Length: 208
Picture 1 (cartoon, rainbow, N blue to C red):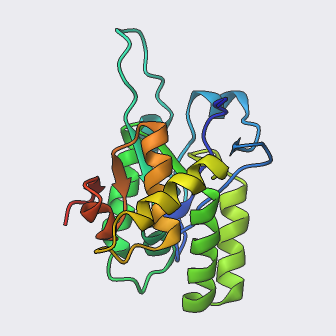
Picture 2: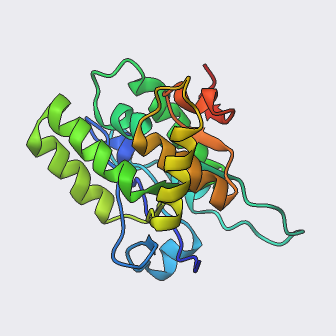
């Protein structure tokens, strides 16, 4: 499966209700075509007070520099994290902002799925209204910090198998596709407030 780089949650932590972004078209992965600067690193979220400070911007844009190659840490971003970032009334809002900033500053590779995008839009539609949901979607679709991986037939087949083989779990179909996608992508950490990921034996950020 070809890798095409990140699609951000840009400005998520900096708007009154948070913002997240998504990319363009592609068979499995999509993102907006980055500028030369964004290929080196996205500027990241804008703090609540406005533009990032010089120090903050330097951290988020810093190139890794020379040194031995090391395995890139990957984290899957779940619906609950997106909603908490966007909606100030969520009790996890402050924790979500803190975690998101930390992940960006550590240059962690963030990814999510088109199913999660769909679920997040619907959740925001119900909780904060259409206008806010549309604003979130527009911002998400314009960014470069979170890679969007599209769920294909193979992932859906595995997701259904997961649901059928765990009769004691009331996992949603979207969560099952996330589990299957994470396994395929070699990801064992999730930015989430959903305990279903813990039940699946995955690491969650922030820890419960």
